[in-house]
Amino acid sequence: MLFFDPPNLIETTLFSSVPDHFRKPKGTMSNSVGVGKKKESRDCFLEGPSFDRAGNLYVVDIPFGRIFKISPAGAWSLACEYDGEPNGLKIHKDGRIFVADRKHGLMVLDAPSGKIETLIEGASKERFKGLNDLVFASNGDLYFTDQGQTGLHDPSGRVFRYSADGKLDCLIDTVPSPNGIVMSPKEKALYVAVTRANAIWVMPFDEDDKVSKAGIFVQLPSAGPDGLAMDEKGNLAVAHPGTGLVWLYDRRGAPVCQITSCKGSMTVNMAYGVNGGADNKTLYILESRSGSILTAQMPVAGKPMYSHQ
Image 1 (spheres, rainbow, N blue to C red):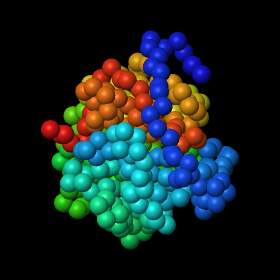
Image 2: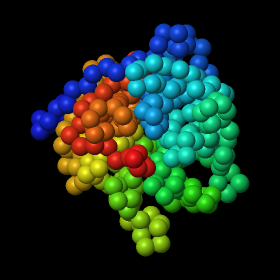
Image 3: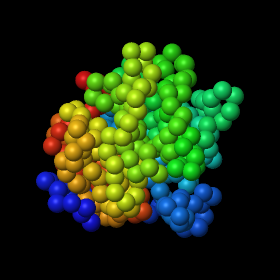
C-alpha cells in the first residue's frame, strides 16, 4: 500500500512471534483493544518495545496485563503478569523497567523479582487520563504521554516530565491524543505522535527547559501515527497502524523511505536493537494483529537513550 513513489522501500523479515502457549483464547480478555471504531478480541496485543543492555527485548501485552522478555535468539519468557493495561515500556540505565499503564499510571517493574508497583497515579491530586508511551533523556529525566480518550473533540491530552530528582511537570495539556514520544538527537525538542490529528508534533524547549512554540513536524495520510523511533542523524521512524507501514522522515520532515510489513497491517511501535544487527541498525517492529516482531535493516543506527559502552 503506497501513498507515493518512495525513493527507497525497505522490506521486513519475521524475527519472532508470540508462542502458542502464551496466546490467550480469544474473547477471554477483560479489555478489548480498539482499532478505530471497531473493537476486536485478540489472543494478544503487543506494544512498548524496549531493549535492555544484554540485548533482551521487552514488550507489553495490553489486554492481558503481561510483560514479556525475548532473548536475542527469540526465546520468550513471561517477566510479569498483573491486573493492569501496560501500553509503553522503557528501561532505565540502572535496570529498572518503567511502564506507562493506562489503568494505574506510571509503574516500575523489578525484572529479577517480577514485582511491579505504581510510582505515580496522577498529577495534582487527580489520576492520569491514561498513559501511553515514554522515553528517557540521557540525564535520567522521563517524558511520557497521557492520552486517555482525548482527540479532536477533546484536545486535552498531556505530556509530562518526571525529572531524575523526582519532580513532575506538565509540559503541555492541549494535545488531541498524544501517543508515541521521542527526543531529538541533541535533546533540544520532543517529537510526539498525535494520533487523532494524523500528525507528528515537534515541541522545542526554551531557555527555561519548558515546551515552546509547539508545531506540526509532518502530517500523515489516512490513519494516525503510533510509536516513534529516532536515529543518530535525526531521522524519525513513525509506525502507521492500519497501513502496514513504518515511515522514515529526515530532520526536515521529508519522507526518506517506507518500511513494509511482511506479516500484517497493524504496525504499532518499534525500537532499534541494541545487539541486533551491525552498529545498532536493526529496527524491531511490532505487528500487533498477528503478535509478531519484524526486523528491518536501516541505513543509520538508532539513537540510544543511554550510552551502551
